[in-house]
Length: 165
Image (cartoon, rainbow, N blue to C red; front, top):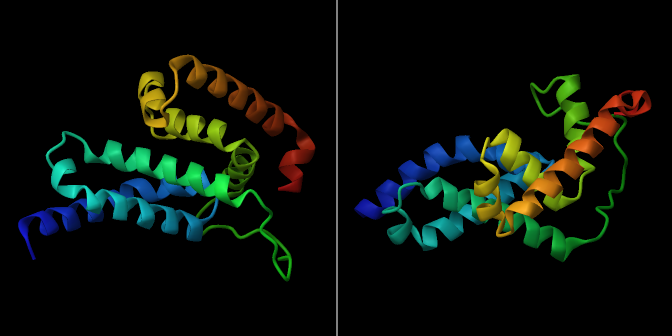
């Protein structure tokens, strides 16, 4: 195994733990999150020799995650139909009821608003960093964040929403 491959393997071991939650928040589903992260890590590997010399290859991976997710929902734009509807929602392991309600509200946002909220408030990026990751203007980040937070406040304050989740 080459030195570059060894450094990539070390990066993946750290990156997986660091970015799987971001992928889950973007997709709303563990399986799709793992697929998204794997696809993004393949793109990172293809450019690893150049990226390994950067100060923060995690920033590139974060952008790849968001871009791949955006591309996937643009391609998919159809319902996910299942043969049998489950009796109750999956709990996602150690996630409590409040987190499930928040995740449900987050998933009701349009994909771009969800990406802004996740990057801004979960990843704790500045508005400028979010704009750079998403490839949009600072004003777009601010307006999408404001609209998303307003919708989340409305949804989470609605008593029937919390009960239905």
